Image: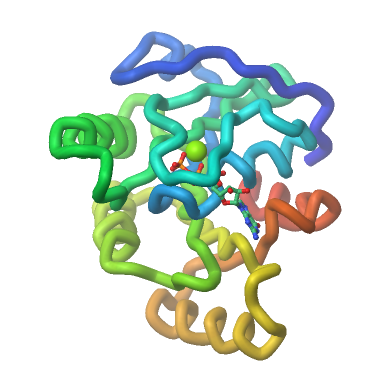
Length: 190
Ligand code: GTP
Ligand code: MG
C-alpha cells in the first residue's frame, strides 16, 4: 500500500454522515498518550497532520483523514486518561464505544495501539473485549518499541501473543520507523 495523498477531512464528536459514505475505514484506538496520532503521521509520512502532544488527552474528537482519496484513517481520542474530568471521560468513552459498536460502517481494521513499555493494561483488555464482541478485525500495534531493548521487546511480544493468541501484533516506533511503515500498512490493509 503506497501512500500517495493524505489530508485532514473533519473532526467529529459523534455520528456523522461522513462515516457512512461508503469509504472504508481504518481506526486507531488505544490508551491516551500511547502514540495513536504519531503512528498515523508516521504511516502517512506527514509531520503534524494528526495533532500529537506530550500530555495525554491531545485528541478529543474523532479525526478523519482521507488517504489516497480512497480510505479514511480515523484517529480516536484515547481512553484511560484520569485527569480529563468525569464528564470529558464519559463523553470520550461514548464517542469510542458509539463508533466501534455501530454496524453500518464498520472499520475494515481496528489498530489497537499499545505503549510497548506499558504493555497491555486493564483498559486495553476491556477494549479488546469490546472489539471481540463486535467482531472487529484487530491488529495490535506495539508502539514506542524504541524504548525497549531487543530482549524486552521479544519478552513483551511473547507475553501479549500468549494472552491473545491469533491476534496480529506489529512492533513499531512512530519516532524512528518511518521506513517500517510499509510492514504495518500491509497488515492494516490485509
Ligand atoms: P491522545 O491523543 O492523548 O490519546 O494521545 P496519542 O495516543 O494520540 O499520542 P500522541 O501521538 O499524541 O503521542 C504522545 C507522546 O508520545 C508524544 O510526546 C509523542 O512524541 C510520543 N511518541 C509517540 N510515538 C512514539 C514512539 O514510537 N516512541 C517514542 N519514544 N515516543 C513516541
Ligand atoms: Mg491523539
